[in-house]
Image (cartoon, rainbow, N blue to C red):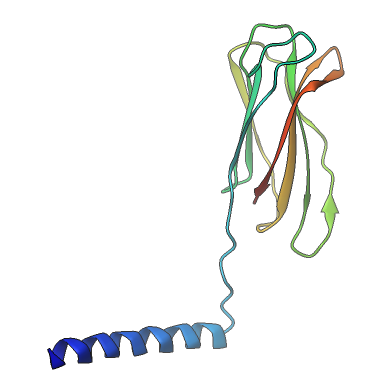
Length: 139
């Protein structure tokens, strides 16, 4: 019993010591990445889930899906705030390749940035706002 307690205490002290050293040497806490999946809403005469998006926080990859044969493309507007506080507003992403297609966009976003994403259907350059859905991810 004493041997088990001694091992437990030794392990706890070793862990605390290693944590203290890491902090003293300047190690920072890892940021919490958060992926995001969105689908478009029904509206403006279009059915639900006509467009889809998956944002993979590891690598900052946006994959935009056109899921219905409805004549509309899929548009993604995104912007983000870097951990330093700087706001960035890149150009929209677009998949107009037709029903059943997906298009991936590999973007360079500073790790730890909060990414605000809006997914909508778009037809002849006109964003169909009733179809839009939004969410937040962390790069």
